[in-house]
Image (cartoon, rainbow, N blue to C red; front, side):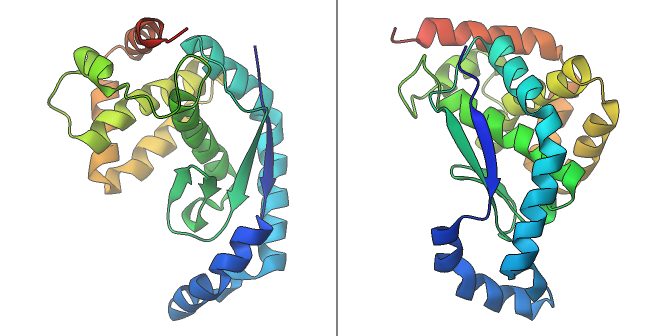
Amino acid sequence: MNIPETRIIVPGGLYRAVEVFLRKELTKTGQEELIERDFLEAKAKEISEAWKPYETKILTAMCEVLDLEFKQNLIEIHILPFPGAFSWPLTIGKEYFDKDRAVDTICHELIHRLLIDNTKLAYDYDTWPAWRKIIGKEPNNPTFNHIVVHAILKYLFIDVLNEPDRLERDIKDCQQYENYKSAWDYVESHDYRKLIAEIRDSYNILSFN
């Protein structure tokens, strides 16, 4: 099984491309410190130290439970003071600079990455029609997508790490975002292990191999 290495960095080229814009926006809110290179380098080191004890265990567990492998051998995780976080390129934004919250968010974004960039499917293959048969047509697209992510996140936090505080924190933090809240409401009212098993089986049907 291919378990990639992760590298947490301040991306040089991307930093230079966005620094002026982000500095202007952060200055408006008195947060200009967040764009300073020394601050970001220190934050990347802090998050990396917090993440490394979890790296192999988390990556192995998500691959095994989904029976999927990453295509990449190395995944870079960018630390930049954007709002939010996103999976491609995998970027941890300023709301998640706390080291524990960063670990939670890295897990979240790596799940997104594995679901779309794995050795069973062509990149960006549309998995949603198969997932709709499992979850149903009612949830809107952002909620629907995160039902799958949150089910796997719950498995990682509870079954793998045995750290229910991480689950409780994520659910609490998501209450301010309607789509994320709705996704957690769905996962908490269903059997997350059964849902994951059905998602895993859907890849065997979709696989082009």
